[in-house]
View 1 (cartoon, rainbow, N blue to C red):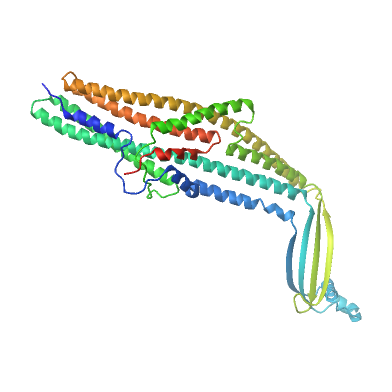
View 2 (tube, one colour):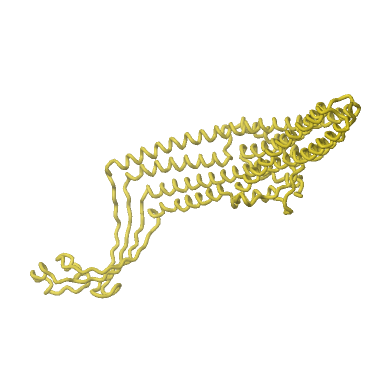
Length: 475
């Protein structure tokens, strides 16, 4: 003989009321919005900071070939003392101190030590250096590739932030549901044991209630560990330490907001597919494809640079010199202006090796571009399917949660009337809790699919900040 128990009803009511939106209690601080998280990651994320520094270095490196294009000027100064016959006579001549006595054979053959303080201004003007110009173009294209790669890294980081942000909310929501479920289960076990002592229910009922409570407790331990790991992962993506854990909203965005954004993107899926069928340049807007295109331009231009090193070079120069026995930039002055042409006919096969190396790099760059285009098409198509599928699954999960909740209500009525066992009631309660969590997971899957689609199609995952207004503030 048994009577109805308040244990199952209290357990299910608490679990369903917690559902997806319940979270463990947290510190009283303002919750981090997705928009704030993305802005923080843009500035502080480790990957973004590395990409920014790398791009800055590549941009600076792109200016190095200007050495062979722009004029250069330098100042020279030096003091020389010599007894070399040619050096001594030349120094005397530069200082305008030559006298008839300087031509005496003994002085020419065995001159006294001569000191010269020489100062000079030198201007060098490149006139025709084809390898420098082509090197500049190649370096700028390489810098463009680095910039596009950095932008792709930023987009990928934003996608990861969206996933981690809502994943952490989902993980804490699951822990919240199970926390309430454990509290209700423990209270129910105490009540059923009391009823066993009164002879109202059997010992088997108490044992089944205890098993269910233990199962919930085990799930809760795992959920709490997962929630902490999820928040630490989010903190790491934001460029924080794992001790600077963010405070998050209490719940995922509601179904209506998520489905509205997903429906907008599924319309974009159709438009993108139509555009893809009309052009062979699918994925050109993605930053990784733009990086590969710039890489091809850089590699092919660098090959031309290597070939141009075998062409003549023409450079001009001008000098203004001072020579004095004691003082720098004093004494007699002279100037020199000239044009120098040079042509390296053979440099020990180095030029041919350079051409071969850069040709191989150009071939590799073209293969990389083909791979990037193919990868972008694959990711776009896969993301489109995932978005449509996740939206369908969310509808099914929502219906299943509603049906499971109604099924539990009916089993509860049968249990109250003595027509159902406690095992049936506990199974209905477990199903209701499980489908509620599955509903939340399906909602997260749609959010993940939207972020993935945005990245795959060359869009901005930051568009998901539109969901900020539909999340519950932290308690």
